[in-house]
Amino acid sequence: MSIETDNIKHLKLIIVDDHEISRIGLKLILNNIEGFEVVAEAGDGEQAIQLIEELQPNVVLMDIGLPLLDGISATKIVKEKCPGVKIIMFTSREAEQDLFAALSAGADGYCRKETPSAGIINAIKSVAAGAVWLDPLVANLVLRSYLPNQPSHNHKDNNNHHSQAKHKENTLSERELEVLRLVVDGMSNQEIANKLFLSLETIKTHMRRIMDKLVVSDRTQAAVKAMRDGLV
Image 1: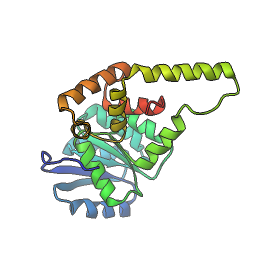
Image 2: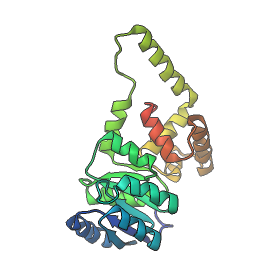
Image 3: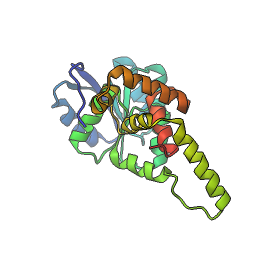
């Protein structure tokens, strides 16, 4: 997926990881990308919060397993103090509970450390442009685990489950479900508009209706709820 970044002239980045070698390697890669600048590094969650407040970066790559304060707790604090800062959880963890905890804390993306450099760069550009970015492998694992396809030995319970799932599906139109799937794929509103040959305002209208029907307040929460409820 390609992200249009003509309006993003310069991105200030902070890397948060307790492994110095990882920070060095990532910094070398990112500083070689036009428009990227790693302005600081942190080795623990508390230091990360201080640097983010001071430097106000555009995007932070945040590990989960940090000393003093873990990455998810640090993300929640940063989002309360600096809501405009975009945060990508950059971790080797693939468990769905870590993904949901990170997104619930306000993370704008979830990227595995095993992701090729091109994918990391795309993730940074995606969240900087306002999209939610989920590592495809992690997203697929979570989607499969939440699809309502498990058989039940209790026929009545199974019928109830089917009715509930059908009701959820019926709350969103086919077009809204299509838009929601693309949100889960990490696309921005403009990208969705381009893909579906619709205007940006039309997509924004669909997003407002989706968030209203799902009773959520932003795109990230919509993506999480879609995965949890097996809507996409």
